[in-house]
Image (cartoon, rainbow, N blue to C red; front, side, top):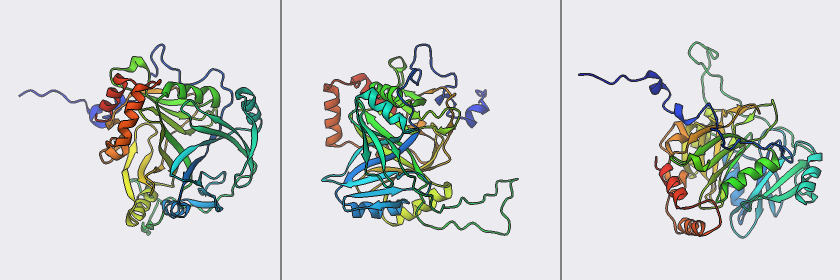
Length: 381
């Protein structure tokens, strides 16, 4: 009996086709702007409204945030790294995501951005003080670009475990006993947003804030129509930064998908996950390792069903790497880990989701029946 030979490389790298190292084809999106207004340095914080700040603070502490400031109206959350807070929760009628804030590389960038957009530079009420320019992106999300007057000091860290790795015998006469405690958040890493006007939003972030694309995803059989998801990083020149600070994807809705917060290592993710599970919180998906960005990940839902991610060991890219191009698929979201859940994909049918689809198909946006069917196919492949 004859057998078809198996390429050993296929066994070792089952996802090798999911990142095209040759980059874009002729005429495809370059993934960066020729002359952006400014270049933001990093994501500063995310803004939410919630009716019950006390409940929000309990989850925040369990998830691993420290409290930077608390008033009757506002709760500012932070990580252990020096810098700005990474989340602000304001008291409101309903639980909702408000928008993002990015760090200006220098104070003069606020003036440059204000002139280019017809906006004003205004003082902001952030711990330590600061100024900002307030904008709206094409999806309607509020976007602040901020310059903080003072940095919050660093807090004590959750130390990484010393690992023995085969020939690397670094730990002797000592045991491993990671405590089952909250995964101590170090910093805000990225936010993912869904939009019906993907290309308009993408170009706005590249042209206005000087961000650059690390990876594009496209729908099977529709590459000629352009990408439907982009993982976008800040441009700090030769300094390597997170693979993505912002990710955008085309969809029937307009809103927050998830945000990600860096922790020390895999044991911090796993032990912190056990701590959350013991307190009745619901895991959405994890633990695993992504393909685009390579992060170790673990996704959870807070009491208001917002999705938050613990991550560690993400890719760092400098400005000279060009975008990768890959087909969008559910199986292409992770190198290893449990099967992706319908909850993570947002694939659970609901009346509100059906209303979003009907509204999007009737509206002036980038979603049409072919795009919608392509997205549905990708999320089941």
